Length: 186
Image (cartoon, rainbow, N blue to C red; front, side, top):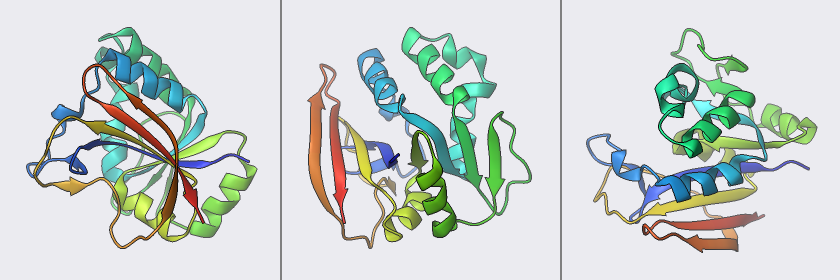
């Protein structure tokens, strides 16, 4: 059965962006980017809130991203080939192919999509993911730790959730990034 994955690039102290909303420090080098691409190859559908969608849609709307490196071109192809579901009450419409919008997060509907999916689903953004964690729908976490202390900002993991995890894999990279893969134990 396909899995629901939560993937995030985090500062070592657990933030996806700093107090000023910046996340340039989280840009992976080519080695890390290719590893992330390889982890994402199983994903057939991305689930996003509005802010994460607006950040990620550049993989389709900004051709300059794919021209920056072979790893970035590879990721652009992966992202464009996948379906996207955007959860938003404020967005009027979506502007990327293979994308649909939902106004509210419905755990029962996500459970059905997960059961009928042919490939894994990936939920992006800690706000939206908090709902999936609370509904016990997340199967794995793929965390990429950046050798950087943000000192505050937007946490990459939801608060108020107590979940036991089993370590599946680790990998360290020359530039100081580290990957931690976990299975959720329900």
